[in-house]
Image (cartoon, rainbow, N blue to C red):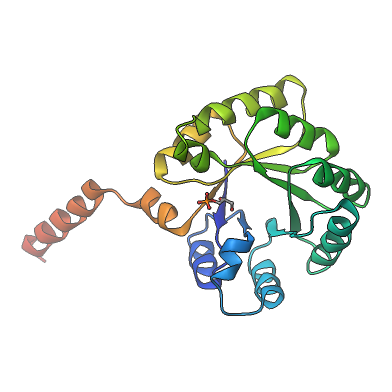
Length: 214
Ligand code: G3P
């Protein structure tokens, strides 16, 4: 399973890259709004640091404008994946961009129908937001199961990015289902590696090691 960091913070991205587990990065306008550096400079730095796909999001609403904006974003670095919200205008833009070799990450996916159309239009990735579904008492992970099954049934090459991840179990359940990618916030990434029994074990070993005759 590939692990992306869901962050626009360069320090967080550099830290997780140093763990040797970082396969890519996803940003969105909300994450970018938290940063103090200019959007383009930040994305350029992230693309240079991590060779995997780096998602940068379009904010235009009409297909022609989305295509123009996407071309600009894709020009920043060869590993950019352009995030486009799913919808009729987004599908039109995606079908044009696929012909130009621009990787599209179709975002704000909340149904299997949306994911199927995104894949058929030529998106390289779809991003179902599972946490936001859980937040409104729906079953985000059931959506991942459906999308993965449909893509397998028809050998669709579009990769599923499990997004809006809230806790480590989301990552594990996504991995058990066989989702291609989980995009994980920094705090959840840290929790994935932490275990209280590991910390207690290290403390005990160190305490006992002090008693060993040397
Ligand atoms: O990057 C898209 C997605 O992961 C956002 O998550 O926590 O704002 O629902 P969240």
